[in-house]
Length: 359
Image (cartoon, rainbow, N blue to C red; front, side, top):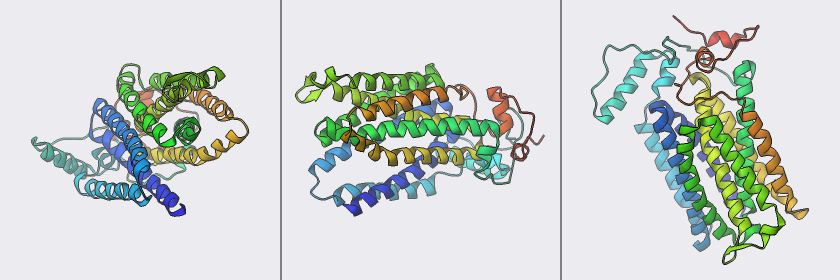
């Protein structure tokens, strides 16, 4: 059991790192609309994999049988990612490696069967050249006012959604057969995540988050009504099971959108770093989720009260993040100021100067 638990933690760690790098590459290599679709499809595949894991665990005679397939998949994807996917032109250009950025674009053009690029000049989203060869440290995320506020709001959103998603998943045993509930939740997740593609494209990232978090909030509030405990949908499945599954699916959809939203808000030079910090906040939430379940010994409704309160705070904080729909990826803080209409403060910190425009 200890080995199985440790293997699960290692798998989550690998998945977390792989999801961050692949999410950034998804977006920086494609258009916004294509990246949104790719993100939702990959997230839906993650949910289907979770449902499949419940099915495999139901029939597996030993825990090793549930660990070997993911290990083979991680290794295969890692090797393919390294040899097939080149460094993103956005990052190379933002660091001042224009020749390598063009070479990367030409590699993509060759793969797609399109003509190579010659005699071109790369410019940022705002039409000016943005370069900085100095690596940006972790502290820049908290010393620059815009990045600090964005990171605080986004990180709490990631943390809350993770507690909601994994807390309800770990609480599945209290709703019935844990294997069947896990399969059911995986099936519920998929259509909600695919529908997020439509809502995020029509309403925008900010309002899509609000709608889905509000839906999750409503489902969890209704599931706490004692009357739904005895209402049966089919067989042993109660209305409460359906409501909790829908609430988890809505929260999981926001999880997928936050990958996209965070990628679009942060400038290129700190995008991977910021996304990694937010992903870490989500992992902390998932680590705390099993301990939240322990309060069921006191009252089965405490977990729902805690998650509902967290979702309310998260909805309020995410409203402070600027809308990114229809806007290009920012390469620098100056790009963020122009794209999102951010006003500079009276004091200009050293990190703000490092990400300056070179004209």
